[in-house]
Length: 191
Image 1 (cartoon, rainbow, N blue to C red):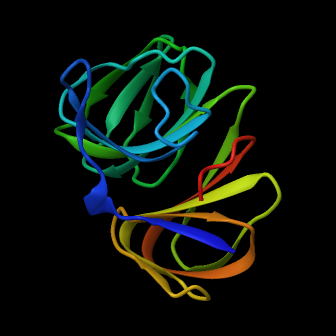
Image 2: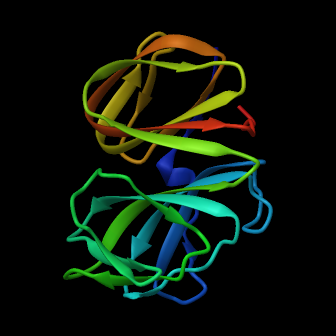
C-alpha cells in the first residue's frame, strides 16, 4: 500500500485570472502539471464573485459545494442550482458556463479530467468505509468537513487534508464528518 498525505496548510492559494476567487490545487497528474497539460486535477476554490467559468476544451468537470449559500451555474444556457452541500454536479469543461452566487462567497471542490486520458468518479462518504485503489486507479481522499483516519496505516486527516492512495485493497477509512472519495483512472499520480 502506498499513501501520500497532502496537508491543507501546505497548499498555496492562487488567484483566478478574472480575480473572482482563489484556487488551491490538492493534486494533479502528472504532478505539478499546468492548466494545459494535466490528465486530471483536483482543487478547492474560494469563489468571491459571480462571473464566467474558464473554458477547458476536452475536459469533464465535477463541482461540489462545500461551504456557503451556493450558486446557479448556467451551462450552455441551462440554469442549474448548486445549493445543497456535498452533491457532485458534473458538466462539460468546454460548455459556456456562468456562475451567479446565491448570497455570498462559497467554497467548492473541483475535479477535472481530460477526456481520453483519465476518468473520475466522486463519492461522498460520512461514515466508515473500506477503500481500494487497484491496478490503474488512484484514490484521492479529501476531508471536506471534520476529520478522517485511514485505520490500517494510522494516517489522520483534518479538514481539507487529503491522501493519495495506490495499491490498496479494503483499507478502512473512518470519517467523522464528510469526505470526498475521488477514484481516478487512466493516469497515475506520483504516490
